[in-house]
Amino acid sequence: MKDDKINPEAWRMATQMVRGGTFRSSFEETSEAIMATSGYVYGSAEQAEQAFKGELDRYIYSRYANPTVAMFEKRMALLEGAKYGMAFGSGMAAMFASLGALVKAGDRVVASLALFGSCLYVIQDLLPRYGVTPVLVDGTDMDQWEKALSEPAAAVFLETPSNPCLDIIDVPAVAELAHKAGARLIVDNVFATPVLQKPLTLGADIVMYSTTKHVDGQGRCMGGALLTDDEEYYEDHLVPWMRHTGPAMSPFNAWTMLKGLETIDLRVRQHCANARAIAEFLEDQPGIVKVLYPGLKSHPQHDLAMKQMSDGSTMLSFELPGGKEAAFKFLNALHIIDISNNLGDTKTLTTHPATTTHQRLAPEEREALGIGDGLIRLSVGLEDAEDLKEDLARGLKAAAG
Image 1 (cartoon, rainbow, N blue to C red):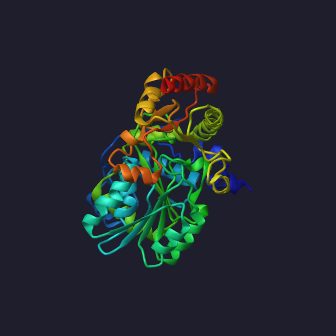
Image 2 (cartoon, helix red, strand yellow; image 1 turned 90 degrees about the vertical axis):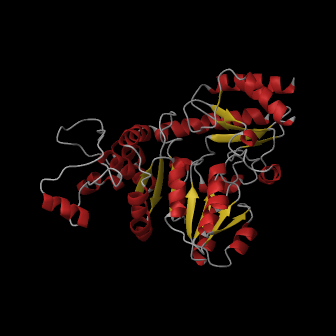
Image 3 (tube, rainbow, N blue to C red; image 1 turned 30 degrees about the vertical axis):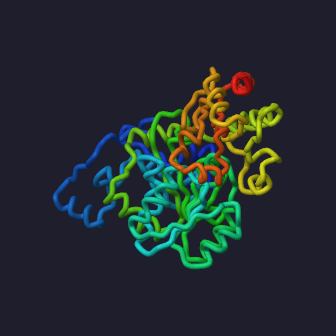
C-alpha cells in the first residue's frame, strides 16, 4: 500500500495535476524549476560520445528534450492516462506532427469534415502535396465512415466536440472501423478537455491538444501536446520528428502550462457550470434560431455526448437571424465578453466563425458544416454567470434593433 502512494499513477487526478511529474534540482525548490537552457555540458568527451550514441540516458539539447518540458509531458500523460506524452510549440505543431510523422506518399487519411480551419488546411491542402490522399466525411454519419474505411488507410483524424458547431462523433465506433482498415485514430480533444473526455479509453490511439487553450487557461502561452500508449508510434515516429524538425515547446511555456494544470480540474468544471447556465438562458431567449450545447437535451447528439463526456463542455454556439449584420451588431454591443478567436480562457471570449476561424472556406463549404453567417461561438469563462447573461442580453437587444 505504501508503494502505491509513491506511484503517481495511483494518485487521484487532483493530486496528479499538482504533483505529477515533478522532480527537484539539487536546490530542492518548492515550485517546478524553469530550466532555461538550450544545451547541456559533459564531464568528458567520452560521456558526450556515449550520450549521442544513446548509450547514456541524459539531456543533450533542448530541441530533443528539456527537464521542465519533461515534467509537463509527464503530467499531461498522467492526466490523459497515457504511457507517452510529447509537448510542442503550438497546437498546430502537434496536429501536423500527429500526421506528418506517420503518413507517407500513397497513404490515405480519413477525417471528419467538421474541423478547425487550420486542421482542415493541413489535411485537405498540405498533405496532398506529399502524395497523401485525404478523404473527408460527415463525422456524425456512420455510413460515410464505414464507406471511407472499407479500404486501407494510414490514419483517421477527428475532433469531438467539433469546432464550432459542437458535433459529437462516436469515437468507439470510428475506432473499430479505423483499426479494421489498419489506421491509427487521432482525436483532437481540445473542446472536451482531458477533464471531460478520455479518448484513449474510447479506442483512440493518439490524443491531440492545443494546450494554449484550457491547459494554460489564461491566454498566456502557446503550446500543444500528443498523448499515446503506442510505443512504436512514439519511438519510431514522434521522437525522430521532434529531433529533426524542431517544433519543441520552450521551457518557460512548459512551466506556465504546469501551473495551468494545477487548477485545470477546478477551472473546467466551473467553466462547464457557467456554460450550461448560459446555454439554458440563450435557449429561452426569443429571436435565436438555435443553441448548440452538448449538455442540452435539444442537442442532436446529446445522449452520445453524455456517454462519452462527463459534462457538456465549456463551449457553445448559437445562431442569430439576420446573418452577418446581426452577428456584428451583437458582438459590438458587448461590454464584458471579449471578441477573440481564442478559447478555454478564464475570460469569456466570442467570435464569428464565418469571418475568422473558418473564413477560408467557401460559402457552400461553411453551409455544409452548419456555419451560417449568423453563427456565434462562445467560450464561457469564469465570470459571474449573471453578469454574462446581462451582457448577452445587451448584445441580443442590439442584434434585434
